Length: 387
Image (cartoon, rainbow, N blue to C red; front, side):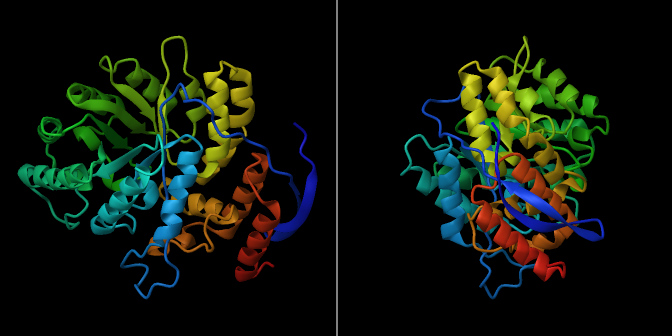
């Protein structure tokens, strides 16, 4: 559908400013029926800009805005993956604040018909910079899992930096995961996050080679596993693993580069989704998943394909800084009143990156209120001396 130009503003490109024509937003309809793919959005958190806490040292959240964003995601048909890396877990969000976030989100979900929440359990309360015994790592996982289960939450078993730093062999990973899986009340989602998202997870599963690591991971999947979320940004490896999963275990794509084709799938199978990019593209992704459920695959791609360049830009290396782009999108679209992040992470991307993000969001029809988005973009440019 042709989208008319409605506003113009000057955006930086290299060392100069150029006119950019902003088009009217695309129109997306909220779903009237369930998707045929399970779709979880890893949700970001909204910082409290007026807190007296030192932003590099302590997390301070705007709870009203943070929970309101979860309601936004539920309204588009997505489940929420809570307190994950998109919420800056391990990059400013500590375990104590994470648990409070999980509690508030699980409580809020009970007032929203059909709302689904899965929450991250890990070992991030263990102080960094030292090695731990395998029993200590097991105990850390047990503590967080028990805390989430006490709230009535479902568990995503997050990858552990402490385990990656302390394990001496794949057997150590098997020992940890088999112990935890033997105790959880309900099946969990296992989270395999590649080192591009978190350098502290390099060599996870005790193998440097991803295919060898995959074999270790596959060997522990079975009882009490709902699915495996894979974030390697490598569609071929994900497909290989998907085709080798035990019966009944889901593949949740975490590939923010190739999600459109992985979710659509092929004649053998498809991936469900647990994606950080869904936080930013929820209306378009919801509309696309509705088309896919209706077997309108061409329309699915018409809607979702323009979001792929945006996602690849947000998640470009250094990939761990993608949270800045996610929060920037939420600010442009009026879901929060400021561009301030936990840990001061709004400074993790340069202004040229954010200007290109603005262009790509407009190209995908995802600037819901162009006048507001332009006003805020101009504010940001002014702060950076290019207004």
